[in-house]
Length: 81
Image (cartoon, rainbow, N blue to C red; front, side, top):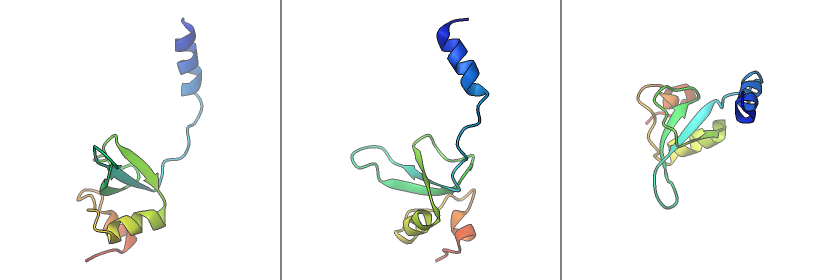
């Protein structure tokens, strides 16, 4: 077993940080604008996401960042149009 394989195996046994409650999906390009808000763990969240707290998720929705149509963070947060 190589050193890199040992490191990966030992790291796999350690629990990672807890998943964030909310995710903000980012777009591509300069400034990486927010393109969607998700509930943490949403299966439709892409790879370009960052964790968000309750206030950041609400603020993004209030700034017209679309809510995911699958996990409906706007419903869970009580931010409906």
